[in-house]
Length: 309
Image (cartoon, rainbow, N blue to C red):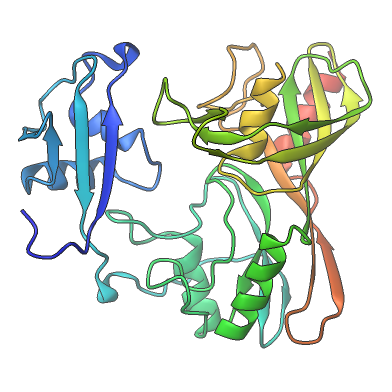
C-alpha cells in the first residue's frame, strides 16, 4: 500500500463492549486529535484494514476484530498561522508560558490542522523550536483538550532541549487542581502505580504492571463537599492521562471525565482539571521561574454551586 515506510501504524483489538460500532467512529474515539471526516478519508484510501482486509466506512466492528491504521506523514504546508486570543503569562526570546483554555487542542494532527494552540502560537511568535517537527513546533509538553492551565513553549531549539531535560529529570514543578467524585477521608497521599495501555480497552490508559512506565502523583485535599473533593495534585512523572488514571485507580475519578469518570449528578462537560502551577529553570539564565493561573470561570462556578448544597 505504501511505497515508503514513512507512516505511523496504529493497531487495536476490538473489545466486546465496542461491538456494532462503525469503524470510523471506533477509530476516532481512540484519538481526540483525529476528526471523523479524516478517518473516513483514510478508510477510502485503504489505510484502514480489519483482519488484514480493507473495509468501507459503513463497516461495523465485531468483537476480537484486529484493526490497523497507517497514518501518512504530515505535509509541511498543512500547518498555518492563525490569529487567535492567547493568554500569555510570560514571554521572552526563549520561552513562552501560556494559560490554555478548556476545549483548545494543543497541537495539530492529521485531519485537524487548524484551530489549535500551535496555530495561534505560530501567528503570535513567528519563531518556535523545530525539534518536535512540523505538527508540534515549540511544544515541550502538552495537556489534554479539556484540561485548562499552564504550558511552557520553546522558541528555539536550545530552549527546547533545556526544558525537555528538566521534564525528563522530574525537576519541573507542576501542580494541578481537580474536582473528584467521592469524599477523600485522608488529608494527603501519594499514588505510585505504573501506567500503560489498558489491555481491556486500547483506547484508554490504565494502571498495569506489564508494558508500562513508572508514574507517581502526590495529592493534598483542599476542600470537601457532599460527594466530591477538591484536590491539589503534584506530578512527579508525566504519563499520558496520569492524573485521570491515578485518581480513578484509587476510587476517586475526576468529575466530568468522559474517558475515566463515573455517572454523576454533577454536570460538567470534560474533566474538571486545571494546570495551576508551573515552575522551571530558565533554559538560558538558569534562574528559577514559577507561574500560577487561577481556576477558569466554569470551575469556579461549579465549586460555588457545590458550596451551596
